[in-house]
Each structure stands twice: as structure tokens, then as C-alpha cells.
Image (cartoon, rainbow over all chains, first blue to last red; front, side, top):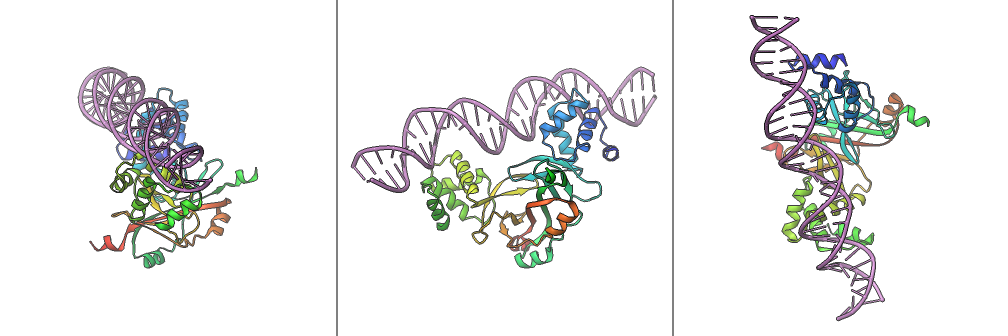
Length: 140
Length: 140
DNA sequence: CACCAAATGAAAACAATTTTCAATAAGGAG
DNA sequence: CTCCTTATTGAAAATTGTTTTCATTTGGTG
């Protein structure tokens, strides 16, 4: 969280109250959130914030690789923070279908060589998404 | 293509001119297409078709597992036909970033056991998308 | 060929996102 | 600490993408 703020400052962006509110809302949730949900949560921290600012902040954070879009079967409108452990713009997530919790996979072990050989494609990036129930939701 | 039509009939859906137009447009492209693009192409085959029908046909085909949504970094508005070889609702695609060509992977070789053990998730489905340049575009 | 439900197209409604623009506030200079 | 500049903001309007409504058309069956 403080890390996110530091990153913003480092890149020359201002650390404003609305941005703080969005960052805190994001950091305090393990689940993926839509702009609307994020807006509701951010508002609890900074009442005056507008939905537009949420969109703008998300765009900014996405550009900086601090949040990632979560691609679900029925739409791709949610975002989750990027785990600080993965420096890169990785896209390897495990997503709980019940509570929305998102976890990142360090390594995906895709046989890229093989895929490249088979298809003849020159591969530059990839995305892996695994869906299911997280330990908590699985118990219920 | 004829296969798609047969499938429609088999499920009790009517084979109408607009649907034919959409199916042909889909079948004749190796690339993923947005509803808008599909509309333009379908119109070349059946002038009177409306964009609404394209949406409806896509929804139908998606339900039947004959097309899949393509999830790109900057939006998920495209569709590609499902390779007839993969009966299942697989989501393992190789996508050309230049021409949009989509190829399906038969097998993804993800170490699901491992992922499950590591994360504690009970896994029910997954999606793999590999992006890069197809053989043709790579040459240019 | 006639019938009827399924399917269609046009227009309207709706939802999500982006743009515009005047007002505000972060943060560096003094 | 105050001033100043400019990035950032919020509200409203505009835009874009998608869905609904409903009267009309049409595929397929008898």
C-alpha cells in the first residue's frame, strides 16, 4: 500500500486524497473489484470522490502495472492489484468463483517452446487464469 | 461451416438467412472479430441484416460452444469460432497480435495438481492465452 | 399453400466508459 | 507559511457498446 504511493511519487504523479482512497480500497481487498465497487469503497475513505476519478486512477495504475484486469467468462470489468512479489506484468491468476479472491502464480510452467514449435508462432506474452474455490469458500 | 449449420438444426434452431450470413462470415475468418466487424462482413452476404441479430447470433453460438470470446489486454469484445476438433468449451488459444488469427491448443499441460496444492484452491476451470506473431506475420 | 412460432430489424432504452471544462488542491519556490 | 503553477478533480454531457421492446417477416411443417 505505502509501496503503491511511493511508486506514484517516484514517477512524478501527485499523491492526492482521491488517489489515496482508491489505493487503500484496492489494497484492502483480496478480491477483484469493478470500478463501481471500488467507487463505493473509496467513497468511505474520501466522500467527495467521483466515479470518473476511479476510472482514471485505474487507468493510471494499470499503466504502471500495479493493477491487472481480471478476465471472467461473463465480462472483464474487474481489477485486482498486482502482487508486489511479481515485478513484471504477469497475468497468472487463481480466482475464487465464490468470493472473488485473486492470487497470483509465481510461475506458470507453460511449455512455451513446445507451443511455439507446434504452432509456428513467435510468442511474446501469455495469460493464465485458473478458476475455482479458495480454501475458505471450499469449506462452506 | 456446414457443420455449424447442422449443429443449429440439430438443436432445433432455424437456419435463417441472417444466421447463415453470420456463420459464413465467422467461418471464413481465421481472425477474431468484434460484433461490429462481423456485422460488416455479414452484411456483404445478407444486406438487410441488423447489428442486433449479430449480437443475438453470437450469444446463441456462444451458448452452443461454437464461438469463444477472445480476451485481449485492451478489451474482450472479439469472438473466434471454436475449432471443431475441440469438442469441449476449452479456452486455450494462441492469438496473433498482428492479424488477429486465433489457433486453439489441444492441450495446455498446466500443472493443475501442483497449483491446487500450492494455493489450496479447488480448481474447476482454467483459461490459457498465448500471444505473439503467427507464421505469416512473423515474416514481414 | 397456409399456418404459426421463432426470428428479425428499427428504434428506444440501458449501461459502461470517456470527454469536456471550470474549479480545486498538491507540492515546489520563495 | 504563503503563493503560484499546473496536475488533478468532479459534474455534466457525450460517446460507445449492448440489450430490450414490439410490430413485422420468414423458416419449416402439416
